[in-house]
Length: 167
Image (cartoon, rainbow, N blue to C red; front, top):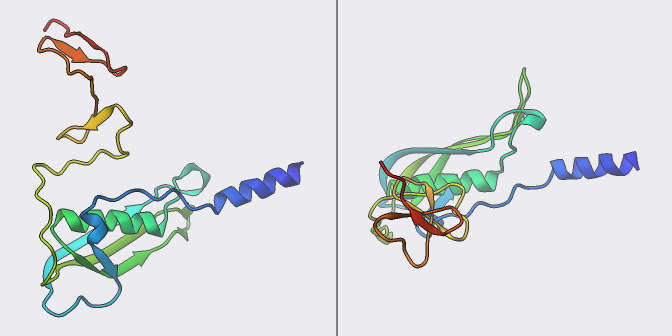
């Protein structure tokens, strides 16, 4: 029984973290180690990471999620291509086993790339909002009431309109 628990524990340590979703525009950003196609215009550097901390106390990252975060960072700059310049994988340090993937690259706009979608204010709630909540301009999940609350009411977390507190 103890052996089974150890095997299951070791197997869990090697599972890939769940893939984080990317925005529609970020999904079109190409990430490669080679040079961009001819005619690409350099925008600047971008970097992203996934995971944090050390050992069993930390949050294990993945290359896929670090790449998704890099795509999002590049998309926010209006890029359509990223040339990777540095990849730092989880490694054993003097103090612990570092669990973070770090990516750095150069962001480019390709000559024939589609224009990025027009977004009033780039806000992203991380993690994505639960059903019944929406992401506001500040990047905070707020409850949605349906039908909408009146001008003197607020929407509680359980999606019920209640009188607003007196100032």
